[in-house]
Amino acid sequence: MKPPCELIVWYVIPTIRAELSKELVKMGMSQKDVSERLGITQSAVSQYIKDKRGKGIPINKDIRRGIKNLAKEIMNEKSPRDVIPGICMICGIVKASGSLCDLHRQEDTELEGCNVCFEGSKVYKLD
Image 1 (cartoon, rainbow, N blue to C red):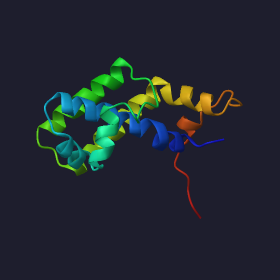
Image 2 (cartoon, helix red, strand yellow; image 1 turned 90 degrees about the vertical axis):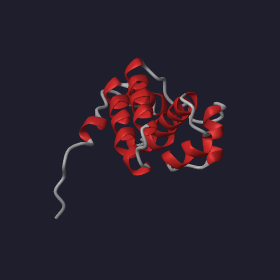
Image 3 (cartoon, rainbow, N blue to C red; image 1 turned 135 degrees about the vertical axis):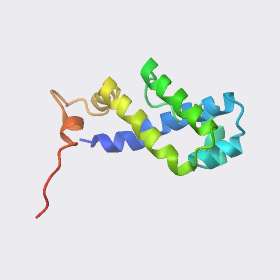
Image 4 (cartoon, one colour; image 1 turned 45 degrees about the vertical axis):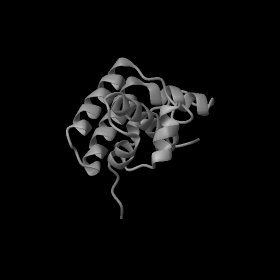
């Protein structure tokens, strides 16, 4: 069984970056500036815009709203370091929407009654 965080790295974050890149370019930002603000390569931005990568999850209206809001913040001179909490917030929307669970079930057909995503937020004591 793949842990949910692996699915986030492989599918969710690239999808968020792709949609964010498209939104920023649509708002008038150059691909070079997008790459600098998101901390990714210019070729990655180009591939996101051309739909060559970053199509891992469906984008519902709540995710779309989060991406648009983050794009507006980025356009208002936010530094690349400040983008991380916004991406994490959108990832939280993905988890809350059930999209991550749907993806997890597609990747591992033996999952039944799984709530690993929600159990993963427990704090464990280390000895």
